[in-house]
Length: 521
Ligand SMILES: C[S@@+](CC[C@H](N)C(=O)[O-])C[C@H]1O[C@@H](n2cnc3c(N)ncnc32)[C@H](O)[C@@H]1O
Image (cartoon, rainbow, N blue to C red):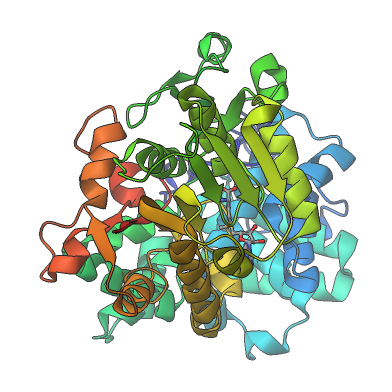
């Protein structure tokens, strides 16, 4: 099972299925939602904390993951599957735990704003474990189809079992206040009297204000209307579908289609599904079919297909993936290189990640690729004018992949953008040294933040007079199935920006990948 399976609802989905308030034994349906068995007794008004004394395993899993994220800086997508296994959750409970975990993490900003109205002290003064239990309770009350009494009873029971009887009383009292209003009413109260659109969007769509501001700026820089911000932030709060790619010439999607995947509409040799146990697929196990976002597939294909005028060495093009770990794009590029009779060097400084690159490349003929463990900033000096095509998939804030990393919006800081800037510039500078005259460098980030995208490209290009920006939007169109991706920036007021391309989750259902293609003349 993928860790996203079952994480369906945005935190703002309605509570339409939440009408029942009868007591009785809980059961979950296929989507992991709790249903009541019919009984007539209404237990909502009795003290839930007095009843349930054991933690429901699915809620316990969500609580443990939230604790690992807030106390140990863990990544939810890595911890969740291990906890699901450890607690032996079945498919339905795993779906419920996934929705609860990811929903509570994504919507943390909105939920904390609600909790602030219901707790008699600053949230920072609460025991962090109590705060995590409250967030789990709020998500059930505001966005899942869990009957109110079950959300209260089970969350208070969880707090009693894992934190203690005293705190469970606090959890009970606070969640009862939260439950008194539905989400739309909370949101209108929280935003009443505010005139700052950024603040309002931040509360309503649970993104830090600096990220809302950055996204708005990026939309405008790429010639889009700022009003798209709502759709963009909403897309960030949705669980992404699983995208597969069959490595060209090596992989076959028929097994995936038999397992219920549907053909991808954006890019060739791709397939989509909302979930499923990928380890069942032999083609995934042997690495010839890989999980990869459609945006990543498109940018890799655009670089492989764009016209170059450099002279191949002995008829063989030399490609370089400067920042290859963990190897997603390197695998697709290497398969495309093998088809064209080219060779690729995949570079990665982290030893662990370089090993992952080698594993990712294992399905591709071994004479097509080499993995180098080293700093990409040195390659330009060591190998000037040596490569025909270079990918610089630069280390970045990852603000374009918030759908996949539910906690990252709270962990990232504006200062990270400034800290990454020099490295991004040095890596692109190195690549421009390493590319042959007539060859092309693709500068890619999984972030739409203009300080990581347009500003880096413009700063670095200003320092040389032998560079030319190619039309990246047209290059994406050329390798897409529709031939009309719409990622180029014809509407941008700045001519140079028009040639740089930006994909968007709310438009392309992909990560927000940025692509600039630079030819050295
Ligand atoms: C955005 S990730 C690349 C993702 C990869 N292309 C893929 O598709 O799987 C950026 C990578 O750059 C690596 N990196 C960090 N500093 C670097 C440096 N000085 N030179 C080259 N790579 C670097 C990071 O370790 C990380 O693996």
